[in-house]
Length: 171
Image 1 (spheres, rainbow, N blue to C red):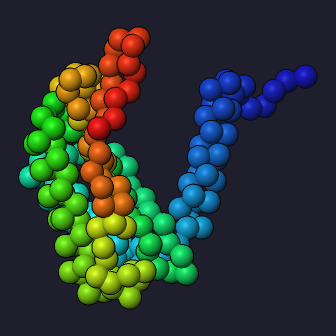
Image 2: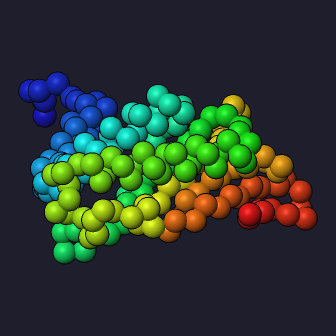
């Protein structure tokens, strides 16, 4: 029996199937998500903070998040990567200033106030982490500090060691 249409190769068949799957995935991923008014406002505030911290300290956004209950933000988090090694003192100053900038931006945005669990929004409800990766981007090792963290109003530090005796050291 003769074929009237040219035979399609495997790539053409799979390519069409993959394209259909990708379009279906994208339509469900983006088409079904609705961003609330409070999330849009928060995103604008956080984008402003992220830009400011990048310009001021060379921080790159690595993580963001938070928690909300009944439409009110209870806790907000930002995590950054820094591609240099810094001292404990400089890292602490940077972290405290970054948290202050974040808190001021949140508290100064009038449109966000009805969506905060507490006003003014206290520093104890903000979490921020800075990973000092160093220029190698592998992470700083002891005696340098790898992680500068502000959690529930307290600053802490963590470093890693490549010796078997200590793997993580917390301050």
